[in-house]
Image 1 (cartoon, rainbow, N blue to C red):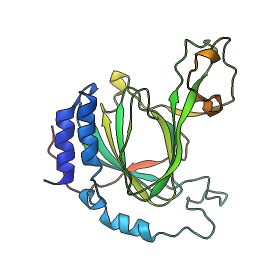
Image 2: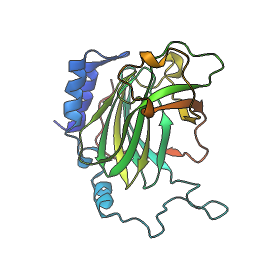
Image 3: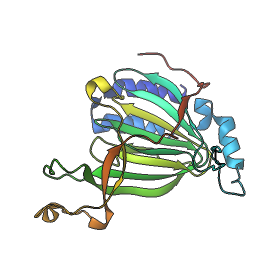
Image 4: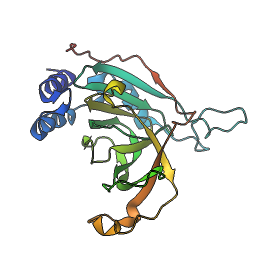
Length: 248
């Protein structure tokens, strides 16, 4: 059975409209996703091209703006939609070199991500669990979970609604592709809408709070505030040419 079909069947059996039925069921899906190769989703040519890719002499790959600047306009990202139902969604983000998916979240969702080919830098955070902050506070503290380079082939990563790096950003180092499974999928009606964030000035914790932060390195805490996505952040729908899966 094709790998993508195995993934689809495992997702159908393991996920519900509120997420995985169990950690064991989620692990069943993750193990299958680990076997995913570029050829399984029609991206073998792109993977070969990524292996041969060489950085430009000036180190920039963005589109030129009116003033001739390239870094102001990072290259657009292509999204290949494979499947979506009330239980889960499956898709692939194809990222050109130097493209960026800015800091964003997956509220109430469990996400499996597999780097299909190429390399990227990932930085992720989780919210610090604190009592209610003052209403005047627009930013919230978050702890660093991951700040590293990933290079294919590598294991599938899993993030959870409240841990594992639910708030994260990607920057492509080489051409790369990320295979994503979201359970449940984004749904504004159900309160699962994507929010974007930016670093805010560091703030002092209220009196007595620091003592409650057991196991948290204060040097790895940043303050994040919600913001609009950058105007130059562009994602367009590409044509998926790989195997299809039966609709649920």
